[in-house]
Length: 427
Figure 1 (cartoon, rainbow, N blue to C red):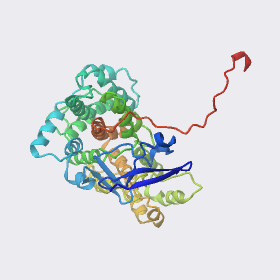
Figure 2: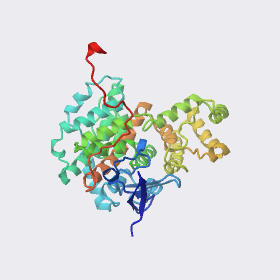
Figure 3: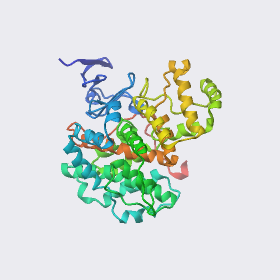
Figure 4: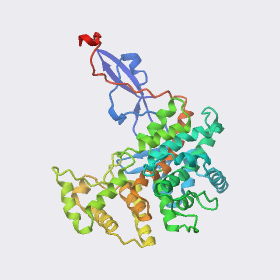
């Protein structure tokens, strides 16, 4: 028996069905609210609104839970590969050995970009932000791959999905190479997805590039941890753009543009900048005191999370990865020592424990990426590379959802009522 939510307005009573998912909060179905009552709901940021049904990702922020298709993120990061997680998000189940091999082969053979796109890159200034380049190049893919833009053809949708996942590392690596004035490197089909990206980013034609296994593993984990995160701002943007029937390349470009915002994809850069500001472990007590002072504008970046009110489950994995990378690369830098010491202090400080201000994934990922050699301008580009898998999976789910309609949020209008137009000479 379906429960109902009772609603009263202007002396009239209404009932709306309460829907239950497999796990998580119940949802009041208000699709008929406006038609029956003439009223809208008011929910800035849509923080209490479910915009869709989804089988992809589940988050319980109070308990610190993140599941992809039912699998805990810690288990996936520890035992799986990014290609396995990509297959899982796209297809609903973890692949068999043969399915994984076939999927990896498909992705590997879609990694090259159309040669004319190299000319497209040269239209940007050398100091252009990598995210600006990625927005432009990904949007331009629809001008090169006309055979995979029919969203009503399931086969074309899957080809476009594979192309986006495969080409994003090439696009990101070329954005980096362009910014430093080095020649582009073509993909190497003998390498893994992540190893190939590292080579295209840091390799040069003059000598062979040897992939560091510890760095490759760390990058693969970072990609897994950023693959999908439910209906966040950029994912909702992809779905909203897709609801109009836009082609998949345009939808993902829209997601990249949204992710570029500092409140969304730039948190790890902000955390690293904070560590640079602190400088050395000796100064940590001073900054801890400032963080506790309500009158001081300083805030500890990379601590706490809008969704997670417990320890970020992704941070648990990154905590271990930080040490593995530092050891493999023999990192000796006060900033990294400061990060480890700050983490230790915050985890044991009553103030931060009481307010549940635990280190989140952004605190660790920025430190790791910097140690590997990425400039801060590339941090959000790497986020976009990984999140493309989630965006593509969410877009495919939306296209095949029979309840999906073109997005059209309502508003609470507070402007002037209708007034008389006055000629310019009478104003």
